[in-house]
Image (cartoon, rainbow, N blue to C red; front, side):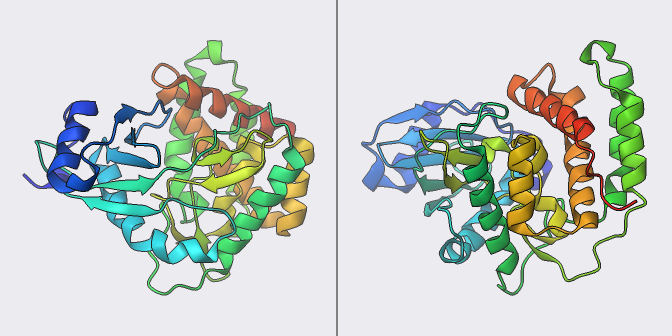
Length: 304
């Protein structure tokens, strides 16, 4: 059976990781293995010793990201102002586990929490510098970013999510208001410049900060590629408060139309996420609610 035909992985636990490491990387076979708690839904992570982490996809889609990261992260790392995952080992399917997997160097830090940032202005500047550096990357042969296409490509899923939320009144989402924001966004001018390099999934769970709240690294590049620069504006609404949002925009130098597309893209992701994750993943559902509140409170929708 090909990996593309497998919908999800068999149970993934510490014993499986020990067997995979022993069989393919015997030099690390004696290292302690411990699962890392994570709000992510695509990969399972296990600490390996003190300075490594094993990352195993939980879905066929996640498995496709493994080769992408193994190919591009070593080439991107020297070009970026914040550390990114360093691939130490490329694992193969074995022991009943059907997909490729990776061993990375451990990156210390914690995920920032929307609404509870200690240094929002400084973090906003650091995120803007990271996004700007991604845009300047000129490596040839880049893939298309997972979310890099036109806004219209998100229309059907976004409208379906709004209708789903109408059926969940306890969420308290103003569905008419978000539908208006989305409809207005579809009339915005599309990006007419060359596609730029994107991380394309700058969620709080893919950022690490230190005890002072400063950016220490950016992780999970499974959606990376080239596309509309609006795709990397997500932190403006999924993480930063209003004053930090303005610092982020000013530092990055974003035009009105791109800013409005970024706002709409972030809203679309949150609307699609909330009905799916509300009973599955509390952290992702909470962030989706934060985004919806942030967007509806933000009058900067772009040009009239």
